[in-house]
Image (cartoon, rainbow over all chains, first blue to last red):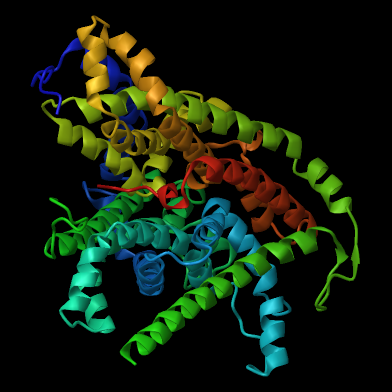
Length: 291
Length: 276
């Protein structure tokens, strides 16, 4: 692209442009991360060995359970988000009345953030809230459903907070696919389901993978809603909460760092698995033209 | 007949989309409506609507949660984070969009990582480090912590944006003898204004909503709205629920103002990051 000025070395201008950003990222992210790894490898009081902090975390059944608790929240929410968002995005790739306002509406809960959604849920989904009132009035249930201060509450809050992200990414991908590909499929006699499953869905898969990865990243780090609408002493004692409690309730920074690093490793492994799964599928142009 | 059937299925799927959207909007809208109603309720026990209305919870919230200071801190933090990440991030995005150099993929990886790694993971050691440098609990510390994800976010949003600006314009300027700085400030920046505006608004919105890092690094005097709201909701029972909801409404309004501003410039589809 920049054939005239392309150089393979590092020159002064490049350093001026890129340097400040790199310094800040190293100082505010890389250094703390390395520092955290260092702390996690420094045995806390009464412990011995390089990995003793990790052993303390993984050896304690209650602490270890936080890993499963987190996965048990992050995976279902991510799958649900994708399963609901794919058909909607698929349908909305063609102009639909009110497309822009609809996608604008979806952005609202994303911006408001998970803390506000959780706080609002306490009233709306509470035993005397409108949701239960409607169900009781319609006779769907005989007594109010318990939808907050438990596992379900966290699922709902994260679904609401993350769905917009997943949906908007998929919408971006679906509307970027050349409609001629589908038309060609129709001309060759493919039915509606075939066109979706054999043409559009495979082309949407990169978007699905990225949306799923981002949704997983966000839900895996769940913290405020696990406390506010969850059951932070039990089923929704997530790994972020375990790390926070180790650091600021027991002041055991060694174990806190070990938990935090374990958390990052598990998360990155899952994200890598999602993205690797994607690269095994079709990769190529979806925009048509000379692509 | 085939035509007709296709028309009906198309309609059906369209209606299903509307139904799903309506359900989502209904639930989310009702959540916010209950917060709004409760914040004006003198009391609300079990009925469909509050028993009476009052504005006293807002005065209560202003006094009890030192709301003005919290709003001021939120504003200072969000604007500083936005300004710094734009000033530092746009040149970096320019370098990544236009230059080829050794270790470029390493730099990209370094920028993507802070957006993937859970904030708690680097937030806890970062908070400890800020404490050692006597910056724990200060507004400056909160700003620094929030820069960690905000700056990479700006770079990653701006890089594809700058890529699609025609490089011939810069080449022309260069051929006429303009030095790099001048090419950057006089040719590229004016062309990149829409992207900068969009990235700035997105970072602003994200910083206002950023919970974990502020939660870990803020002290009593440097809480932002989300964190203050979290503490209020966490200690529910100490204070009337209506006053917490009043706080939530103020948070909601602040964010909505930003969001409406953002939507004037940004297509909602671009509100989410595209990792490529």
